[in-house]
Image 1 (cartoon, rainbow, N blue to C red):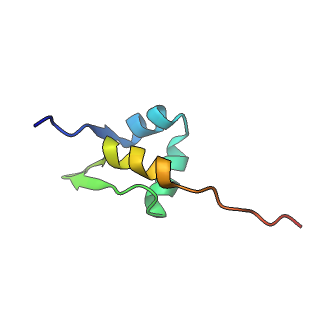
Image 2 (image 1 turned 60 degrees about the horizontal axis):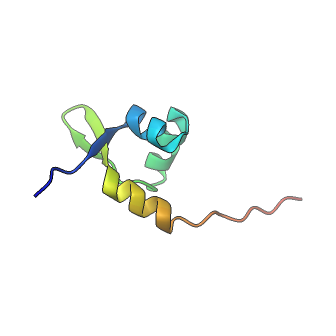
Image 3 (image 1 turned 90 degrees about the horizontal axis):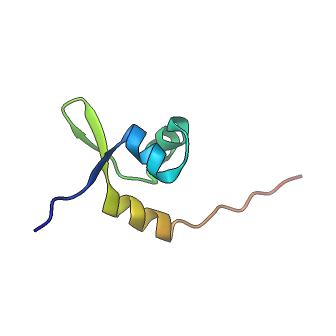
Length: 63
């Protein structure tokens, strides 16, 4: 069985083409599930891909 691909916060930011701040915000808002191994935080690539496919953009009400 193949090993699950794990991405660090910096790798995830590069993979998605966003800033680290955006990754931190998504992590805080539970958009992506994060895991810890000691002091290292990582994300499973398959879960990130699933979240990106199912994530619906939020509508904003501008006044």
